[in-house]
Image 1 (cartoon, rainbow, N blue to C red):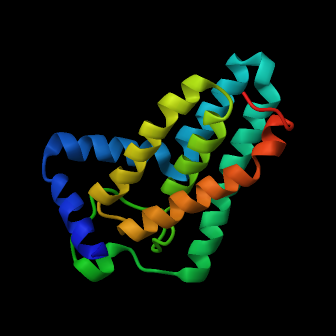
Image 2: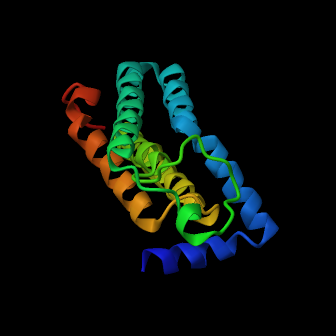
Length: 169
């Protein structure tokens, strides 16, 4: 099932507009850069919640680092090794489980969504698009993305009270 779903989504990358969008999203999410920049921008723009934004950014970075640690233990090869389908992007490493892009995207969606209603509406769709992009470019299995998203969401959820100082929106 994992391979069939990956193949179907990877086939979407044959459309050059879809491929370009997936590449751009994958590039923006590399090493959590999109989400770290968003958190720092939120801290700069929202003086009232600056500390919470910085803590949310730290949670997002921590989730990303945790996924890299899990990846070193699990060592699941990327799909190219098993499917032979050439990926649309280059990757920083050879291992795919869990998806660090999905981890940082889900952590940001949970963390930043807890800070502002606009964040709760805007970040999750962008995070989902980054997650799907990893399948379209052919560098992760769906289970890699699902595991990464679960790890990111859990990390941010566990740190939510610390992030907000015990307060909610």
